[in-house]
Length: 390
Ligand code: ARG
Image (cartoon, rainbow, N blue to C red; front, side):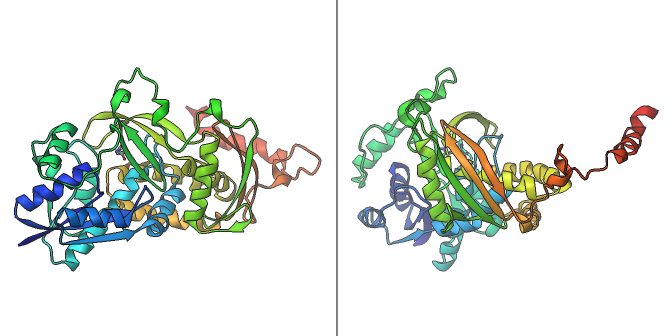
C-alpha cells in the first residue's frame, strides 16, 4: 500500500482527510504537533485509531517552536504589514519539517495536510516540503474534494462514521499557538463590522481591564528573554506569564486587512499579548544598545524578513541569510526593560543595559555636558554642502 503522512489536528477537515485518503488506497500515518493550542495526545490517538489509522506520531514541539522559530523572529521584531506577529506563519515550516522527517522515517512518498486552497498555509507547507525534499508528493484533499462547505463535511463524516466531535456551532476559523491566535470568518468578513467581542480568547476588552497598572521587568541576554521580574525562566514560561498578564490588560489585539500570498485581501483578528510585550521590550533594548546604522539597516531587513516568513520561505537562502545578519546584531542586546501594562498599552518605565550607547554626558542639557557645541557649526557646513550647492 502507498503510505502517506498526514498533518492531523483531530478537527473536522483532517478527520475527513483520513477517510478520503484511505478511499484513494493510502495507508494513512498521522502526525500531530503541539505548538501551544488546546492539545490532548490521548484524545488524538483514540480518534486517529478509531479512523483506522495505522500509526500516529504525537509531538510536543513547543520548546523547539520557541527556541528555533519564535525567538529568532523576536530578534527581528518581525511584524507583517506592521500588525501581525506571524504566529500562524511561524508554526507552518516547523510542522512541514516534521512531516518530511516522518515521511523519510516511514519511507512514505506522500505527505498530506488539511489546508484550504485559498489560504497562506497551503503555500507555506507545500513550499517548505518542496524546499526540504522536492521528490515528496503533496496531497491537499481540501483542494481536491467536492466537500465545499462545513455542512457537507459534517455529512460526509456522519455517513462514514468518523469520530468527530461537533460541539457548538463553529462560527470562526481559529488558529492558536504559543505566539498568538488568529481569528477569521463569520460576521468579520464584512469590513464594516467591528470585531465580535465574543470572538476574543486571550484578551480582555479595555472597558473591563483593571484601573491599576501592572509592571513587568524582562531581562534579555543577546536578544532573548531569560528572566521575568528577576526570576530566571524558560522562554515558554515567560511567554505564558506575559500572555496572561497582557491579556488581563487588553494588550495585543489587532484587526488587520492583510495581503495573502495568493493575492486575496482578507481580514483577520489577532490576539498576541506576549508577543507585543516582548517585541516592545526588545525594540527598546535595541534602541539603546545598537548603533544608528545597524538599527536602520535592521529595520529594512526585518521588513523583508517578515514578508518571507509570511510567504512560508523560512528555509530559503534569503531568509537564512537575513537571520544570520540578525543574529550578529544581537551580541550586545543584553539588559532589562521594565514595562507598564495598562488599558491596552505597553509603555516603558525604565531600561538598563551595561552595553548602553546612551551617554548622559553627551545628551544632557545640564551642567555635566561634554558635547563640544563649537564642532557642530563646522559639521553642519559640510553636512549641508550638497544641498547648498544644488
Ligand atoms: N492570516 C494568518 C496567516 O496567514 C492566519 C491564517 C489562519 N487563520 C485562521 N483563522 N485559521 O498567517
